Amino acid sequence: MVDVYCERCKAEGKIRSSSPRQSQTVPELEAEMARVQNLMEGLARERTRLRRRINSLSPTARLPPEIITDVFRMACEPKESTIGDAQHDSTILTPLFFGKICGEWREIAWSTPLLWSSISLHVSRKAHNAQIELLEEWLARAGTSSLSIKLTSDDEHESIFYSLRAIMDVLVTRSMHWGSLDCLLPPQCHDILANNHFPILTSVSVRPPKGTISTFSHPPDMFRSAPRLSAVDLSGYDFSSMVLPWDQLKQFRTQFLTVAECVKILRRSPSLESCYLENVYSPDIFPPPTSQMLHSQLKHLAVTLIKGAAMSLLNTISLPVIRDIKLHYGGTEFVSLRPLISLVSRSSCHLQRLCIERSIFAEDDLLRCLEVVPTLTELRLAVLSWNTETSIGLSEKFLTKFCPSEMDEEYPPDVLLPHLKHFDYEGPISCHSQALAAMLEWRWHRPITSSVGSTPISVARLRSARIISPAAYKLDPNATSSLTSLRKFGMDLNLMAAGVDLI
Picture 1 (cartoon, helix red, strand yellow):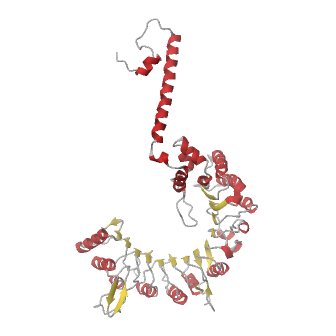
Picture 2 (cartoon, one colour; picture 1 turned 135 degrees about the vertical axis):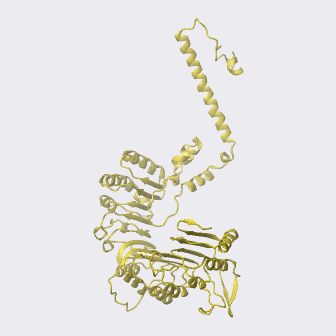
Picture 3 (tube, one colour; picture 1 turned 90 degrees about the horizontal axis):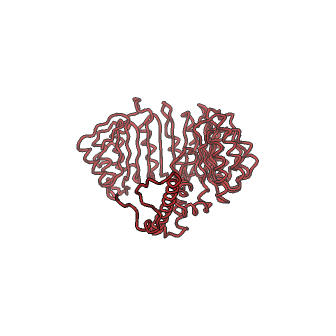
């Protein structure tokens, strides 16, 4: 029989011969098994020691704890999102992950309060007690760090609401350290927040349960005790019942407003830099303003319209530093962009990003608008009801304005949007594929300074183009070759039709 034992084991006499002995009794066999078990445990300890020795020789083991802490912190940082984004992200790493790797990492993670400052909890009724216990321990490890709190749930019923209240009861014990709050907030939690102070709270995004009528839904009374609050999302709440430190707000989002209420928000918030107004409506006849309200800080404005008449909002304001405008209207009737043209002209602004989403392409109206914003670097156009007869979409007439020819007699020799670097379009395409390829080639290969007619112009390189058609669209071989070459040269080009990538 082959001897499988090492010399050390033989020398120490810890393993007896494996040859069976007829005279062995049960107690003797049990004693032998105990000795083997002790040996196995000793070998396991030796293996652990060797593994630790190997780990100690790795490059990461020689890093100082401060560097390891920084790596942990960056790995645990939540992804950046716009205010109001309440999507649950289960892929975010937590300090608990690092505690599973080894004892040294666990000691570093457990003793670094900053790693515990981000709380992302997906509320579950079944795991209610365990979540409360974990949350208490989590807060203890966070110490006095500024807390970023995000609470989500797949369900919205009474049992979840009471779980949320129990969790909020624990969280408010550390209200002095809240830095941001993003959560579903049922009325059962309002009284908890009303009786606490939030001295370092800077961002709040709270939403009432689905099905709540915003006209009758009042937000929590918690904002007057937040002296550093600057970003607020109260989508779903009644505007008239909002009590906010308006003069210190820099970012605000809400919904279901009249044009008059939108103007009130801008008037009350002189420091506002970003404003997101959703589902704006207006009477069919809105009296023309006697004078426009000047807002000297607003840089980003996004407006979603319920009724086309609400475009009159743009006639009531002047925005000299506006850089980014997004307009969305899903109605089927034509809504002119004249109010936007008037706003840009009146404000003498240098608009850089423009997004227009509406049901009708309305080529001439759109061209008039684009002619007054030559400073644009990013343009997004979306035709929401592409199958209507009036929505012909991208045409050769439209594309010609982006790369005019000296032989073109219909248009003056001007290049539309000479600083454009990013173009995004969704909707029907009526132009020939060669015209589309020619425009993209010209905007990529153009010289830095081009001469059209007798006037020299500076034209930026179009670095990315995303063009999506809901219907089938055919590329001829020459266009396919040109577009493929543009991709090889470095243009970020995406051309799809009916769900099929064309290049």
